[in-house]
Structures are given as structure tokens and as C-alpha cells.
Length: 69
Image 1 (tube, one colour):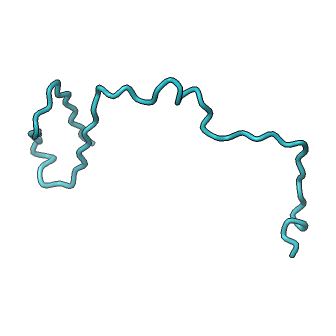
Image 2 (cartoon, helix red, strand yellow):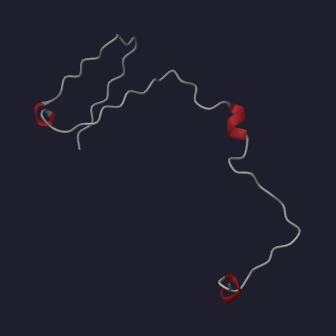
């Protein structure tokens, strides 16, 4: 697999990508990522991703009881 990576300091309205001959006339994926994004804030990283609940007791039900109707 060939990867072409180029960092543009001041992007214009359009970008021109020169492809090597082995990549021409093939199906390609082009991804444009801004490098100046700060990403998630510190508060978002500290908060748990899932809500955690506490319960008084756990009950493990047997297979037969689980599928009873």
C-alpha cells in the first residue's frame, strides 16, 4: 500500500495532489484533517464515558429461570 502524506501550512480554496503513476486511475480515499484542532477538552477527558450505578445486591439468574415464560 502506498500512502502520500503532505502537510499544508496555509491551505487555499483548492488543493492539488500529484499522484505517482501506480496510483492513477484507481479507486482512492482522500482524507483532509485539520492539524490545529485541540481535540477534546480536559473536562471531557476526565468525565467517565459511561454512567456507573451502584446497587444493593446482585442476583444471578439460572439459565432455566431466565428463559421461563
